[in-house]
Image (cartoon, rainbow, N blue to C red; front, side, top):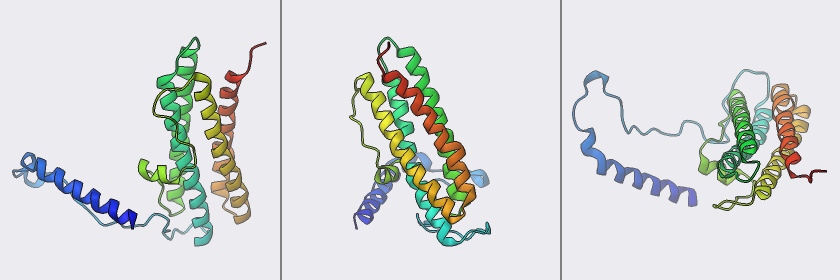
Length: 209
């Protein structure tokens, strides 16, 4: 019901925008005129599976997609945290951490693309809209402002652990179900990259001897 109300409000807002700027789109562009403001129907619901001939049952593929989308949502939030903290970093180690956090963000972005493409390979729909991501993620929301440096780094570690816990669960599940492709990505790429990033961040939170 709430989703229908949001969709109705969104449609009403879209209509208002069109009416306001309609005068900008008047005229005949001929055969090369782009089709602007075209609306279509949703051709695959989130959570619905297409049939793809990859020798995995619908149940196995659906289970893998559900787990991957949870990891994907958390990873997108982790990426955003890295970018935010990259911008807001300060102190004597500003330059070092500024570059490190941006490097980690880019690596997370690669993982996000890999996970999303795996969902699509299995016949599912990858979560991509930031508003949808916010509904799925379990990573705690940070304050809107800037935190102390140690707090920002600790927050990154907490988000990593949330991602890693879900990755480990998914590794066990895909091992049982025989989804070797998803299992390989989770072990070889997602888990190892997150563990390595945890190490690099955690070493900035210890007292120097």
